[in-house]
Image (cartoon, rainbow, N blue to C red):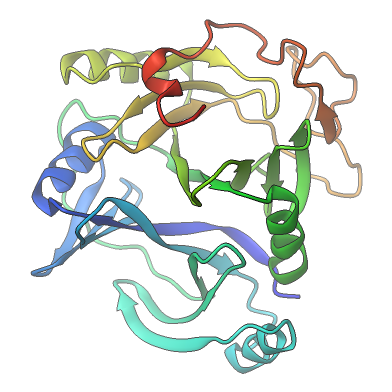
Length: 298
């Protein structure tokens, strides 16, 4: 098994790179690191690569990169992937700050890149008034068989179960955060949403004001979820992709204990991974999602 540690960066295809650069700079608060004819690289204010944009006919999530434990060499990781029936390819200097990566395709057809070494990047200063997130937090995906993808990520990349909603929505962690990836049942495998962590609730309130100034509709939130217990706000970016801003996500710092760090809003004492009943109210508070959140997410 290869042990994933965190999500690194995500690559998106877009028909309008300039429009998406402007969005990630002016709304999200990422800084441009480098620009090529058909690619752009953007980093968080702390200098971590977060988003890669590539020219494409239709908006889509093209690749997901994970930092993995350096306990295994790239050659050993390739052998382990091969033992699981997966072909891999070693790449050099594919993105700024990452000298080497190992690429393969996961069970739902998404390209995955693994890296062990990376460096902080010198990016332009975030745009004034932008969100300026702490990090890229997680990615959610629609897939026909969440259980099969859960089994794949657990076996191949060492992800651990955090929660289920019924049998159709699973939350997985690879570090202390409650979820780094989640998979929800649905047709036509595609990204469901991406999520950026903000510092605290005051920053989340500022994010709501920012979306208002930018004429970007809040399609759900603020809401405190049940699974993960994060406070979240959702909107759609210019490529019609769902974007979440969140804070207060549950964390499990001690895997041996098996429970998430206690919080006043937890109903379970202690809060352990479980299956949430889809017929019951899960969110702690907040209004239900609006029609523009439900669009395409029925």
